[in-house]
Length: 142
Image: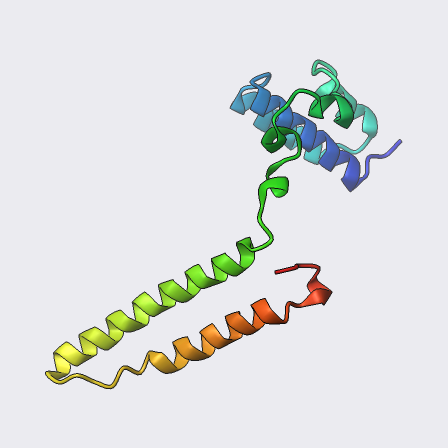
């Protein structure tokens, strides 16, 4: 039977797991991955993973493992993470704009009005509005 893109992706995922577990070295992984991506029939994919153990079912994988390992990092992500990340971008923008304002003030020999207040104020207002009225269509709750 001919291999589909999903079959090739599943094989690549299994090879990546084997690499992470130390069952394959990097050169062997890259060779097998190249063969997997060019495989035409499912039999070619099976030979690439024949010497690798079958992955355990998801229920067995979660037993006895810490939440961060068994459930993945998504379980540990706070719903506020995206919003906090936006504020980090805002702070980075504030630092850059303030630096530009400071350099132009020093070069001009006179304090220029603090123009970064306008874009930073608008940006902050948008972030606060996003916290008050979250976008329900994207599925994110803030």
